[in-house]
Amino acid sequence: QSALTQPASVSGSPGQSITMSCTGTSSDVGGYNYVSWYQQHPGKAPKLMIYDVSKWPSGVSNRFSGSKSGNTASLTISGLQAEDEADYYCCSYAGSSTWVFGGGTKLSVL
Amino acid sequence: QLQLQESGPGLVKPSETLSLTCTVSGGSISSSSYYWGWIRQPPGKGLEWIGTIYYSGSTYYNPSLKSRVTISVDTSKNQFSLKLSSVTAADTAVYYCARLGTTGTTAFDIWGQGTMVTVSS
Image (tube, rainbow over all chains, first blue to last red; front, side, top):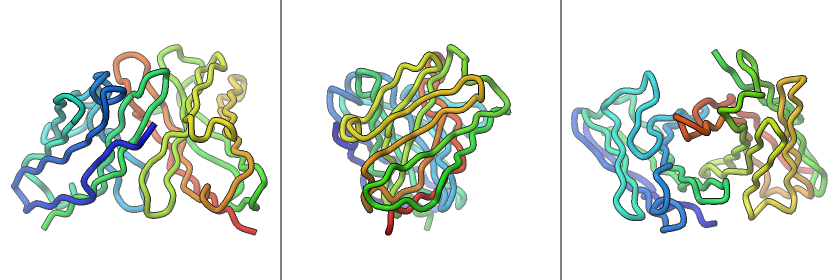
């Protein structure tokens, strides 16, 4: 069970849209529609932003959207805001009731 | 409003056993709709799933940690616990407990604030 692959960092300007990727295998991302995304600000616990590839939990802005193609999932943030600057982690079901996280992507809002 | 709170020693000696408890408040740990999990994050690094437990006691562990991990549940106290044996400095991390949905929201939707555990003599 290897960690999912995420780019170390992405950046964008306020108002812009960015997309970050999360690459796994057919045994995790590609095999199930149970990909979730978490936002983590420094010193804080992760917060669920997207679940089941593209669904929003109650209270999460629809500026955040998720998708999946093959073994790669993506998180898109539109209308980038300063408060979006954080670390983002993807997570996927990996079969046999196990889960795997990505290494995380640091989003900088320039 | 469901809340989770981790508790336990912040300092553990190498080769000893790390023990943490997660107390669930504002809801029942015996709900059939949820599992309960432990996730850790070494300083400056990413998240790592440790394992999950169902209120019935069924457990599922990260294969890389399975030989050292035990997760248990105490429904009478609305708590679940983590034991990690033979710890080394590599086990130094913030440890989070979290709720995992089984139907509807299949994700870790509610997290505790986390507790820092340092392995050092």
